[in-house]
Length: 303
Image (tube, rainbow, N blue to C red; front, side, top):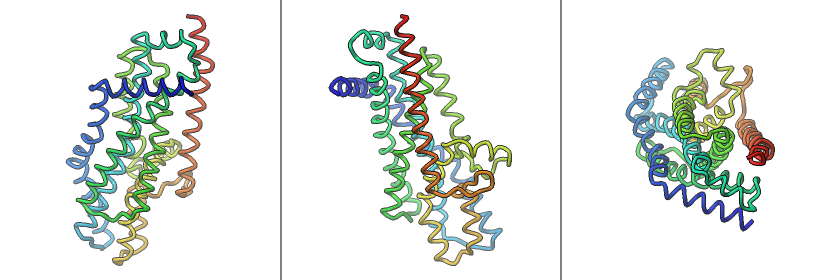
């Protein structure tokens, strides 16, 4: 364990020492918050007001702000937990490029210990940044319209932790095969641009075609986004019900913002969403372990 602790400390220090990598990871959620608040908030607000008008209901500006803010915050955190993990995990690639990994494998350090150190240091770095982003997002919600309870905040933090675990496991499997800066940049660009769409962060899945909705329902990140949505908006929906909104209207809004997700036309419960995300984490961790035990060990043995 001493060797593992030393490697985790080494990887984490190198990450924070690289100011470019660290500040890029840190400001990414803040940039997304500004972009979301500037461009997407108006789109979400117009959609929400249109749904209310169609149902013949009215809502206060604070309630609308809370609904729009909850949707924006859940989208931002859902994307950041994954994209920041990919950025934090670039140290694995940099060690290959610089030759540091070869130097480490010459020492008595086991392959499993080295692989675990990359995973744990990425997890710690990503979690720190995402928790900071969560604090900023909660401040944004307090400004726009606060309807959260202490339990809601706790659930959001748990959701962030789970998605960071998922993002770290996914990035570990993908970055495992990268060996050049160009490859790392290309993967980072693809993930940053594409993940938000396929997880329902940039646009609600309910707005996609029926065929695409069915395809996306097989992706675990979709359910991570929905967990954040449910906990960020639970108080808003409760307020709607207490102020006289018809149950059908509240349920329709829940459908429109992906709080309700359906797999093969069956509604997925929150408990099952947790099971899906947790199972995905376990699967990617197992894949990462298998790759390190087989492929990498064989490669290092031949070199």
